[in-house]
Image (tube, rainbow, N blue to C red; front, side, top):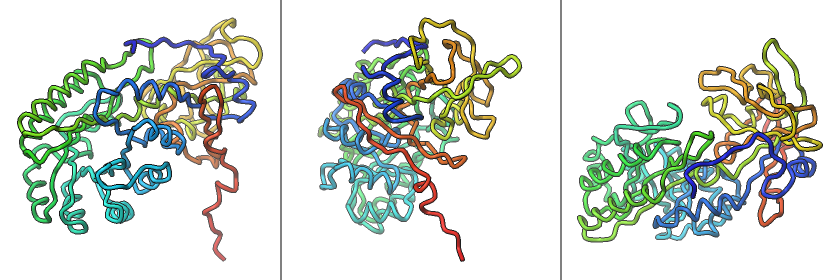
Amino acid sequence: MSTVRTFTTSRNHIAGIAVTELAEKFGTPVYVYDQQVIDQRIAELKAFDVVRYAQKACGNLAVLDRMRKQGVVVDAVSAGEIRRAMAAGYSLEPGKHEIVYTADIFDRDALELVVKHSLPVNCGSPDMISQLGERRPGADVTLRINPGFGHGHSQKTNTGGQQSKHGIWHTQIDECLRRADQTGVTVTGLHMHIGSGTDLEHLSEVCDAMERTAKEVGRTIKTISAGGGLPVPYKADETYVDLAKYFELWDATRTRLSEEFGHQVALEIEPGRFLTAESGFLIAEVRSVKQVGDNHFVLVDAGFNDLARPVMYGSYHPISVAAKNGDASEREQADVVVGGPLCESGDIFTQREGGYVDSRRLPMTRVGDFVVLENAGAYGFVMASNYNSKTRAAEVLIESGEAKLIRKRETFDDLVRGEVIPG
């Protein structure tokens, strides 16, 4: 894999199919995923013993089905995600560990499912060990450890250190082992994840923390997980992590622990964004172009109800223009602000953290053209909402040159289905 990626401000096709054709067939806004990109990312992680997909990144059943067929297992962070994995065909057979519940608490629904199906659990709080042990004495568990430091593309995606709610604090291992002993629970694995979109230097620090913690727990450890956080480039000056070097660091850690414990220790990785982000595109139609003081606004029919990352994190997404007629690359470029339809000033896709509005250099657009928000395959549709009573977009998977509908566009009936006007 190349360490860099190039971006363009005009786009005519996604995975060989015209953007205009996709918009005409499925309507807008619409999420489109390129299965070939997901396949490539899975292949790049084949050196790890287990690739466990963090399905919260993009949980459509069709995406999960394709993951499963390539041997990728899943992480579930809620009762709904457990059921979603089951619906996608993942096995509940003990020993296969195809579905692992990872969280910082057991809500009541999740605990019932975990007990009913004897699902493996990755505990992010000491209380979880006791709660599981009371219901399922003798269970095996993995501990998610907060090593005392973290790093990510945003403070909100930093999952380590004392400001993060995630994981068991690294000085509480003894307490966890005492809780486990009380109900015969065995700690058989360790997991560390310090943040999403971090870099190799910070990721490599986790190896040292993992090794120290594993030795503290002892030879019951059978599995270690490198967690997720593998970054993908959203800008031209951003790069991929050197995966060969990353695996080398973790493999060396695993090898030393295997020698220490006298048995083979399995090495997992838990990617979410890395597998799906670059596969995804959100196509929106331009509905208005207007001048507001010095700002040239391009307003589209997708808003932060469809893609929340810019308003939540100030996240940057590559943006391209697909002309309704002709080729947008032949047009003059201008600095534009891209916004959505919501009755909300923050409904801007070209903003940075803190809500500051930025402009983006794009080909001049006209009403009826299409704006494509790229790298939208992770934390895109899954964070969509019905704010302003907007219905959620359709989802489409392009596979072997064919565009397949994998989620129908919501209707107004879907929007109000659970609402009741009492008499």
